[in-house]
Image (cartoon, rainbow, N blue to C red; front, side, top):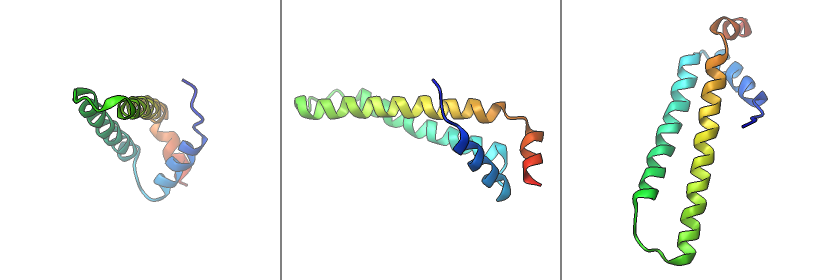
Length: 92
Protein backbone atom coordinates (compact mmCIF):
# COMPACT_ATOMS: atom_id res chain seq x y z
CA UNK A 1 0.00 0.00 0.00
CA UNK A 2 1.50 3.34 -1.03
CA UNK A 3 0.60 6.23 1.23
CA UNK A 4 1.31 9.88 0.57
CA UNK A 5 2.86 10.76 3.92
CA UNK A 6 3.90 14.35 3.33
CA UNK A 7 1.05 15.56 5.49
CA UNK A 8 2.09 13.10 8.21
CA UNK A 9 5.54 14.67 8.31
CA UNK A 10 3.97 18.12 8.58
CA UNK A 11 1.62 16.90 11.31
CA UNK A 12 4.48 15.25 13.15
CA UNK A 13 6.54 18.44 12.95
CA UNK A 14 3.62 20.51 14.22
CA UNK A 15 3.13 17.95 16.96
CA UNK A 16 6.78 18.36 17.92
CA UNK A 17 6.40 22.12 17.86
CA UNK A 18 3.55 21.71 20.32
CA UNK A 19 5.69 19.37 22.44
CA UNK A 20 3.89 16.16 21.50
CA UNK A 21 6.32 13.32 21.42
CA UNK A 22 6.64 10.55 18.88
CA UNK A 23 5.21 8.27 21.55
CA UNK A 24 2.13 10.47 21.93
CA UNK A 25 1.56 10.53 18.18
CA UNK A 26 1.83 6.74 18.11
CA UNK A 27 -0.54 6.42 21.07
CA UNK A 28 -3.09 8.49 19.19
CA UNK A 29 -2.77 6.25 16.14
CA UNK A 30 -3.04 3.11 18.29
CA UNK A 31 -6.19 4.53 19.84
CA UNK A 32 -7.70 5.07 16.39
CA UNK A 33 -6.79 1.50 15.45
CA UNK A 34 -8.41 0.19 18.62
CA UNK A 35 -11.63 2.18 18.06
CA UNK A 36 -11.90 1.14 14.41
CA UNK A 37 -11.09 -2.48 15.23
CA UNK A 38 -13.73 -2.60 17.97
CA UNK A 39 -16.33 -1.03 15.67
CA UNK A 40 -15.47 -3.48 12.90
CA UNK A 41 -15.80 -6.44 15.28
CA UNK A 42 -19.17 -5.16 16.52
CA UNK A 43 -20.49 -4.79 12.98
CA UNK A 44 -19.17 -8.17 11.83
CA UNK A 45 -20.50 -10.01 14.88
CA UNK A 46 -24.02 -8.59 14.45
CA UNK A 47 -25.88 -11.37 12.64
CA UNK A 48 -29.20 -9.52 12.39
CA UNK A 49 -30.96 -9.64 9.04
CA UNK A 50 -31.21 -6.02 7.92
CA UNK A 51 -32.44 -6.73 4.43
CA UNK A 52 -30.51 -6.22 1.20
CA UNK A 53 -30.29 -2.41 1.29
CA UNK A 54 -28.92 -2.19 4.81
CA UNK A 55 -26.70 -5.22 4.20
CA UNK A 56 -25.06 -3.30 1.36
CA UNK A 57 -24.51 -0.36 3.73
CA UNK A 58 -23.05 -2.74 6.32
CA UNK A 59 -20.60 -4.15 3.75
CA UNK A 60 -19.59 -0.63 2.72
CA UNK A 61 -18.93 0.25 6.35
CA UNK A 62 -16.84 -2.91 6.77
CA UNK A 63 -14.75 -2.02 3.70
CA UNK A 64 -14.28 1.55 4.99
CA UNK A 65 -13.20 0.36 8.41
CA UNK A 66 -10.76 -2.15 6.90
CA UNK A 67 -9.30 0.64 4.76
CA UNK A 68 -8.87 2.90 7.79
CA UNK A 69 -7.26 0.12 9.80
CA UNK A 70 -4.72 -0.54 7.04
CA UNK A 71 -4.11 3.20 6.72
CA UNK A 72 -3.56 3.78 10.45
CA UNK A 73 -1.28 0.75 10.66
CA UNK A 74 0.79 2.03 7.76
CA UNK A 75 1.08 5.39 9.54
CA UNK A 76 2.23 3.62 12.69
CA UNK A 77 4.91 1.83 10.66
CA UNK A 78 5.97 5.08 9.04
CA UNK A 79 6.13 7.10 12.26
CA UNK A 80 7.88 4.23 14.05
CA UNK A 81 10.54 4.18 11.35
CA UNK A 82 11.50 7.82 11.92
CA UNK A 83 14.51 8.00 14.22
CA UNK A 84 13.82 9.97 17.39
CA UNK A 85 16.88 12.15 16.78
CA UNK A 86 15.49 13.21 13.38
CA UNK A 87 12.27 14.35 15.04
CA UNK A 88 14.18 16.26 17.71
CA UNK A 89 16.35 17.95 15.05
CA UNK A 90 13.18 19.25 13.37
CA UNK A 91 12.11 20.94 16.60
CA UNK A 92 14.92 23.44 16.48
